[in-house]
Length: 240
Image (cartoon, rainbow, N blue to C red; front, side, top):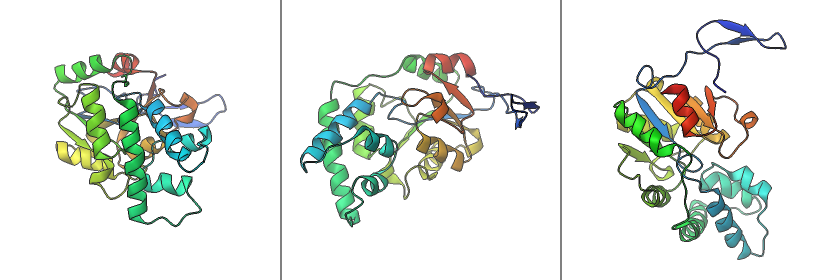
């Protein structure tokens, strides 16, 4: 599932010429690995969905799968506009809604989070090659700290960036650019690992290469990536 390599041009089955890309290799053209969190470091989807369902129950509203898909990977400002379009919410309202829902998420998810296949081995691979790692997430600071502590990797990253530390959430590049700045790396030296369309767009907007993990979306939904992998075991085989 690796994207095309080198600098030659190939023709697709429809005859359209595509620019081939330089292969991604840890230690060769990657100096920093930037991890998204939800859907990459930990499988948090069930906890978030249950939290939104419980939150919407307070208002006798049904939270649909379509709504969950629409807000996946977005920040509080964007998701509130999607879920509550009829309300003129100010920043205080958005923060309150986000804080109340995320508190439910942490209660539901405590002791119930899993990582994806090969995740810890991939961290060990990066460490063995001297490649620093950071987290760049659209989640709030409390959730970032909570999830990393829950899965036991809080000390594995040289820096973590949440939506609370930047002006604009994904798909704007602020989160990833801040992560690179904290690690002292240039955007073109970074490899982002993402699972959402918003995150992939943010990586592109930041001028970084990006791997799409098909943990929460099908491969055909993750356009714009340099590489696709089912999990960290496959990713390690491709770029290690």
